[in-house]
Amino acid sequence: MAFRFGAKHQVDDPSKRQELVQEFINSHVLRHASDHHSPNLPFLHVPLLDWLRYDWVILPLAVVLMVTVATIAARRHKPVPTGLSNAFEAYVVFIRDQISVANLGHEEGLLFTSYFCTLFFFIFSLNIFGLVPLCSTATGNINVTCALALIFFVLAVGTTIWRRGLIRFLKTFVPPGTPWLLLPLLVPIEVISLVVRSAALMIRLFANMLAGHILILTIVGLVLIFSWYALILVLPLVVALFLFELFIAILQAYIFTLLSAVFMGLLLNPEH
Picture 1: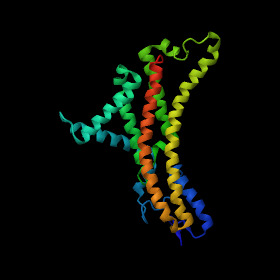
Picture 2: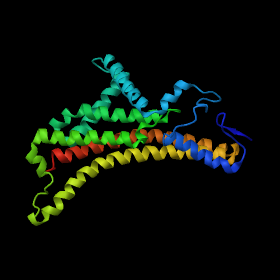
Picture 3: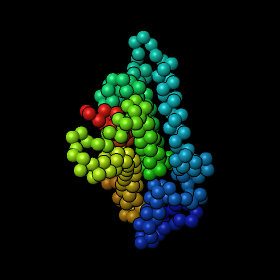
Picture 4: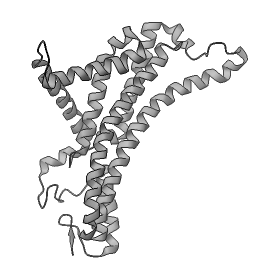
């Protein structure tokens, strides 16, 4: 049985199949340049679809999807919302009450509701695009998650200085009641903890999304390694993992948004 991956790849030697699976995973997940002669559809290569492999294409597509859904929901708004408008209103109310106001307080919570709504929907859209065949998983790129964490860091620090003042912001690094002899030790720890919180947001989202896709592609690669007989076990497992990844796409967007609100609340209201 020959396994064909374009004009250059025809593998009859079983010892070469594992290397080919690793090459495919590296190309798809780690964004290495792939063979432009390889088919991106069954037995067919469509050059336009190659653009979907790039994160800088998926990012604006996620923005377009987000704006489109919000626009449609707004245009269908009625005194008693139904359908998409009702779902969107429930979504906004949940983010406002359970995430934003619950962690930042009433005044700041209302101020940042739109930010957290946008953050959740944007990350969720990127995660969903990553489940579409041929599309890149932008949240599986450390540069994208780093940018999201950096936006949070700048926004959290800037808002705290704006709303509370520079002096009160600096006091957040001094635990109340701490003996002055311990301040040279505890203050650097508090500063580092602020940076670590942002890094945790970055790594958590990146690692979870990348690991899920590597797992699915590895299991699919068993078909290539062990021939089509493995398809009997692999297909149900891949479907189950795909549904689980759909759940993870929602969960990771929620966790990133929730932790962003919690960490921002610790800066704005350190007394709580």
